[in-house]
Image (cartoon, rainbow, N blue to C red; front, side, top):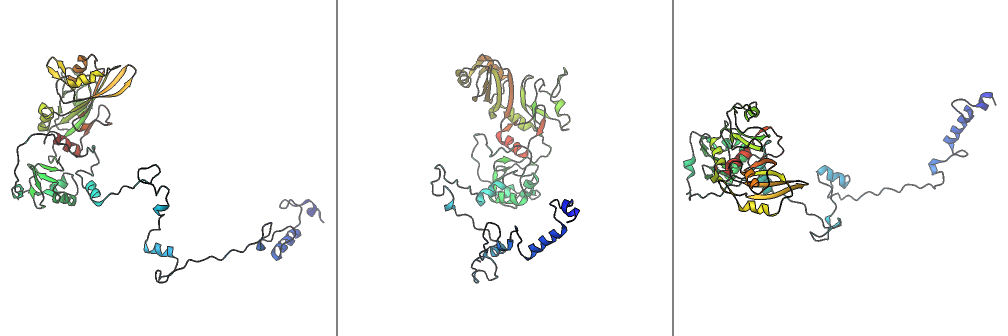
Length: 395
């Protein structure tokens, strides 16, 4: 044996020669050598087992004339794979409502899906979804049926086109709304598709929601911060509304109602004079929601006292609802709703019961709420919000 065979090479540290490698490969090719496993017969400690022949599923030539596996035929035909029977699921045999019973899946019928998709301004991206319209209960005299021929204006525009231009829905959906009797023109239900109206004079409602056809009308919500005067101009140079609305719109706006300098929250801005007059008129009783912070603890009987009425210098005043929202050591947060528009009415009511207001925020006027609008910002109302606001005062 040579010196290289005794010491081994870097590639073979075991000391085997190249001849030894060749003999091992020769033995592995012809048969198992000493200390080698014969993988062709199983080898090792486990006995060799031949695989069982695969059983093919029976294919009925009448049901599967094209041949192939049934699963493949179903896939070619577009059929869905069979689901697990409901009887095999845990809790299938239990009565609905009992612990462990299967929950029924909600089924949405074609009518429900159609009603959801065809709601007025359903595709609007801006504003808040306020749900169905709630009109104020106002006494009106009986109105007789008006022939739809009297509502037709030969020089006007088709009703469905006017609705689609106002953003109610597509023209096809608007036609369905008209056929279903959900559209009113000047207080009369219209069901004929050929009716033409004048967009400048017609008053159109869809599901009780007023459609504003005048594009020049502006409706905004301003979240007034503390220290801002509720006027467009202030001779003393204090911050006022015009400082915030100057960069939003060139139209001359005026505010609906007032908030004192120390009060924060919602203030409506518009150029619709009729709406502003109705929102501030006491006969329409538009509710306003406030969050009031006072020092605690707050006795239980004071809320009932405020709802019953408090004698003030200009008469008896009361709140429509009273709710305790939060209570922390030394402070109480209360939500009150009232429709009175008297000056500083909330502060005077709480002063009369012995709990001066520490902080006052108006969060809602009629159907319009602040939501998560940041303080000092102004946003345009959505068309659905405008419709709800108009409907709240009978417009």
